[in-house]
Image (cartoon, rainbow, N blue to C red):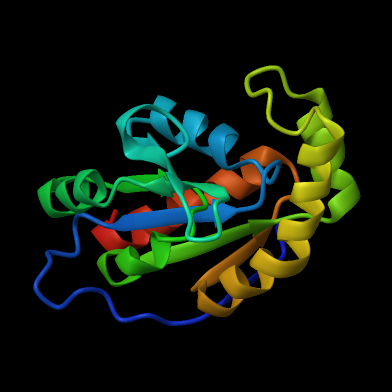
Length: 179
């Protein structure tokens, strides 16, 4: 069974429990997109914020750039969700603004050597192939992951088979909806 740690978060008081919202977050290579693909094939609504209308590049005050969620699009998605489980995956500096609208914030994690091996082997996303991108992954693992861990309601170690990870995520939606 996958190693997990869980913290309690009260669901939004005005929302019917039958429509759970789960944020899946973590570093590049933890398996967020893979988990979403499987959850989507099982009929859940899934949104990968790395693609499409959900995110965009911004220029920070220091002149560097960052990939952030489009806040209006995310607010509309969460406010408009009315039925079944919703799984949103991504890792962005502004995602914390939306934590109160999720029933669960799940951190997927794995050791650095696993993350680097996965990003080098994957064929569906070019990020992580260049040396500077791998260095950024390691820096994010050191700096960003502890911040995500501190605010997550659950952590799943993704060194286990993907099916075990997905079953744990799916269980969050099933528990919330009473299935």
